[in-house]
Length: 201
Image (tube, rainbow, N blue to C red; front, side, top):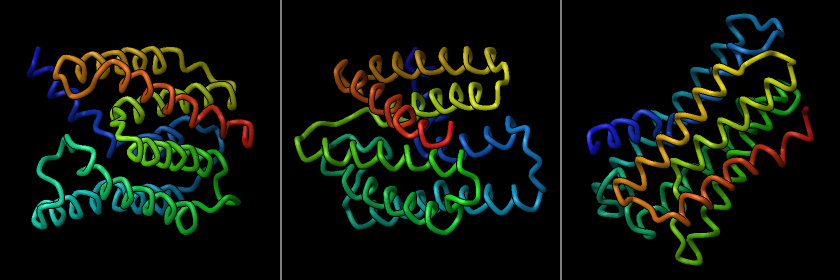
């Protein structure tokens, strides 16, 4: 069970949520999007949200500001979250401006809102489950896309619900978070996408 919990925690790491939602959008959307446009979005988003955070983590670790990839303490989480929020802002302003792809724009707006909420909770010494925030946000985004494009995504949504439950179980089993930290993370993830959906649905 411990091996499974660690495996699913790595597979659905919060780092992969932005690129996951981006790829999901281009796979689902019935709008015609040239391959060049898709590449111009997917590649920079992958570099900014996966490669850059990994490099900055290694730098922060060498500086002694973080000690493990799990970011166990509240102090360790501050800098990675600040950097993540800055990267999301950069994506919103430079990679996918509002007049480009509104569905993606507000997806990243929701991700930014969720990140800011997690940062604010750190001020109250509350460590939100970032895994739960990420996967629940992606789940709600997929539901929104299904409604928006009137496409039956029941299988994909069902699988993502199972993944969400598995991640919550894994984080609790590994004692990485308490029940309340996971529940708050779930609500932040769902609400961050639910509150932005009115602008594009």
